Length: 241
Image (cartoon, one colour):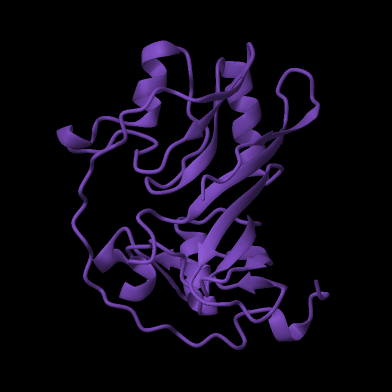
């Protein structure tokens, strides 16, 4: 691996807007019929492996009520929500099991004391070995749930990344560490870097979108302080791709 340098850091000074089709695909919601997969459980925390294809929380429509949160509540009525993963994203998902733990975990997310590591497969061979993307994001209100880069009005968004493998398929396996937690941050940042995530339906071109049967983005690790012991603990869920 090479050291970070100004040549492999994408920031606001050299950003060139990417062209994208504004048409949104219809949501075909068919969540997988699978049992809960528990990674860790104690009196304070329930940590699950969220499958791709299910909403973290219920949607507004009656047909979108099935969600990981509702499935958990059916078995753990006291479980509380502290964060979300996009419907297409899989991986580590933590739910506090009491009010004290809820306040503690929420505070960590708010103060960015948690550490998140994602694995993604992106279109093409990434030229550099690692870098930092610094591009502010805001909602594309006319085309929700899309987000877009806005250098004047966007909220600060930072993503650390490094290449894990340049595959013989012509794609790249990459590790992503979001320093901030904006909606669709990893999707938009990789798109603007020039390497859209495979299977991505909102921003990727057709060749990248059709290169996988699901979004190739997985929350592989989440590190936080245990709300009772105070120990720093890392929960892991290996990427299924």
